[in-house]
Image (tube, rainbow, N blue to C red):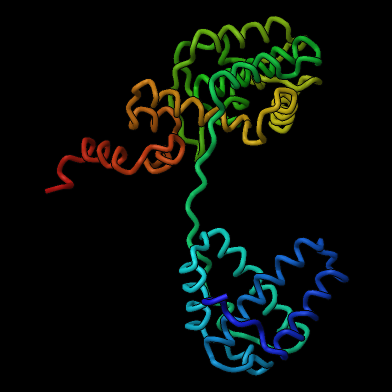
Length: 311
């Protein structure tokens, strides 16, 4: 087809096949992975052959320049390849060059300094309100009643107050009964105040009424089966079981409930600065990622907070 890069030259193709055989036999990569590597690296070698106008032998592979690597990446972007796909291709090319160095003594200095394409941030996926309610109602349904009540209370608190899982599980017995506004300790031991909805306070009290343990005021509010602090992994596993039972995606995690808190507040007309404070974010850009707010809305908030910056 017109516009397609030529295939790799005989010398480069032989090295490529030997590398792929090693991936399959020694490193036991799947046939699909090996085929993807073949396609990616063959395209790279074909580009180099066309770019140089000659075969790519051993010496040529060791002499690939940073400019040539950048030219190949630019050509890939030019044909519409997404940044993540290009990063995957570059990873395959790096792996090939590492093998060339280790197995054949062909070291390409440029491959060690070329940078991967900048990837767009993956926006977190909040849990829709109906799904969040279903998770809370379903979590740990087959467990002892007090454990089910504990997990429901913890997830309700994370969702309704926008807490990190560590912040919820960091609460002490002395914090209960929870007030309308509580103080939590977040990243970097920074403290902030967050409002607690009646539903969350009631869920915590229901759990405490059923809890068979009698911990001291300084001990954890949320307890494990034996009375020690609840391991966050157990809460994560409980939510994972609930989401699987409900047919929800793997993105529905306790941390995603925190995203839901932020996006639901924003949808209800909440101020981005206030949401930033409630989440305990050091920068407004972090809150932007959580809520998926666009750049214009972010700069509007920034202008209001810093009216002199335009002068």
